[in-house]
Image (tube, rainbow, N blue to C red; front, side, top):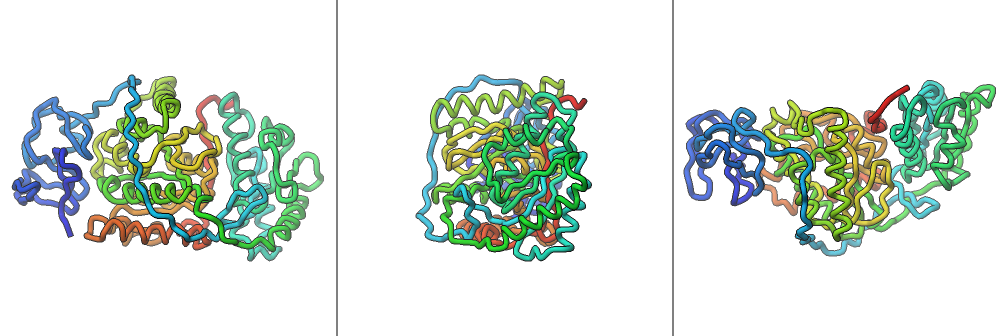
Length: 495
């Protein structure tokens, strides 16, 4: 196994793939470098002297500048480099579109075809409260349905509780209403019961306008204040929905119907050299089959945004991407918050120093494909190919946002690990083998072998098999534990 790696020929640093000790000699590009101090796994070592104020290069791009002279062989981290990032920038469209090409794959997805032609990869009964006031009643309905009925044909009977739907204003109220409407439309739900209270801001009658059209056989509504016993009524309606879904079957569907969300969390120094590039290869492969991927976490594009901008399909998409970036910076400034308060303590412990470094690893999940569309929060995807989505870096909110946009599954890369799951299958992909071996109860796939001498194409083929097995019904770890939830983006005042 390799013990260190230089990623790009232009880089000033090598990455420790194992704990390296002071005095140890590494050889990079034919040059021997003696380590001046210990360098932990995932962290950076200087391959030559770097002057104060000089940029430090990793991935072939600056990740910050030296705040003091750095000697050859020294550990590089937050004590000696700092971000170059600042407020809104002026950008120029300089197209650099060079998508990778993959041969057509004749495999099918065994999915559930919905009446509107969409494909679900799960067949679940969801109870969606319009307002947090009826969360308890919704939970009581679901508990009785699972206890009193044969739901063995369903993948889950699930309530997606939230604290919103009332006492919200403006954009927050619209976000809640649109997010819940997206859930009603989601193809992983074979049937939906919407449970309202009756006096909330998010009135069922108004919410139905947001939904637009729906399958009246499979989407039902109850207003608690308008029935004598909302739990009894809910159990009765769910019983009808259980029977309606009983004969649903998986059928062969084209790969082009897959919509996959791309997310990272708890990143470390391996994220940009294993799991994120692997997901990027998968994204390119799926897009070559006519499928769709969506990349989000806008604050974690800062510092690497020009890579995405230069891959915009045209000037209009470029302009939308510029707005995506600058509008999110303006959001931080509206609340007098620092734009670049990132990376997290866990990121830094894992070897990531600056936001540029984190972002340059993060955007690799988008592969090399052309950016075909830019989506606002809660927008449902319209175009096949690589899409960018407005959402924050927060793991639960961003993963939920990907699902709200229509993704049937989220690919979640992590160097630290996390047990959560969104309301669609959320595959945890470890950046390193230690995490995979230590947290078997959390992690679904190990990308750490990419720096352990396994060929990248072999890892990609195994990963494609894992994604398709999941789409065909194989449960992920968070589905086995039942850890699933929705988190809605909130920005403003609560009354």
